[in-house]
Image (cartoon, rainbow, N blue to C red; front, side, top):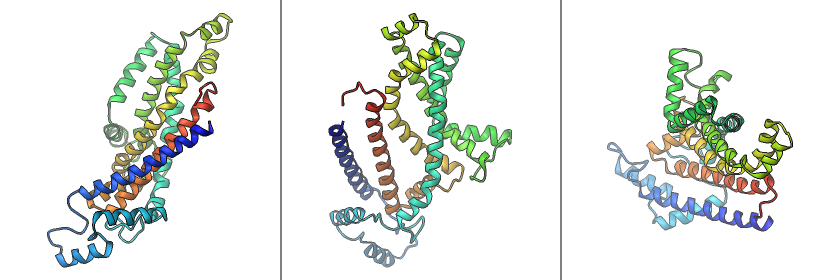
Length: 304
């Protein structure tokens, strides 16, 4: 187990290094810049490029960025929050985004997995068919479309919920729902499929023959083996929630990471784009690392 954990840690660190490198050089290929414009004096632009080191060869800029990153310095925002360090922007905005993402993931897990188990228990019934229809429908709708639909129905037409900002507990409902609907039905459908594969195995048949109650069989015996593919999908699910939060935060005017990331792209704020991309890349890679280690906790029979 320890050998596997160290090996996965090494590959995770290598992946982080590749993310940083690819992001840096891709940013160099993007046309335009934060100091370019029709009404900008070329001399001022040249002076600013010299001040921030963008007049140096790309390889020198890359080396300086890598050295600064190892000291916890991701640069200074040029446009979106001019004068603020990128780390200050991230630490100021991430708590809001992290709270939304954590709650959305919790809602998806708490509702999605039991729905999948019940659908497998009611296989072939009306409940199962309705669940399959709804899961196919909602998994096909992108998060930004779902967010706009929720806003249109519950905020604009019914006027039950606020349309923007995070002011009270009601204002959390729409953004969290927009982020949680897709992963909830995705996890539910995956749970249903794996449960149907497990319930046909011999030890489940034996448990039924012993007279154990169906809920006990499904939740205590079958779910533990069926949950492993669900855990495997948690990495991409977390990635989907985090990236989907960018659009959700922009739509609801939430002062989180999504707002600054979208604005930094439109403003060509290179340090902030790099910083947020690297931050989320490291976060998601670490989430995948933890998910891999959870396999042995869930099922000790798995040999790493």
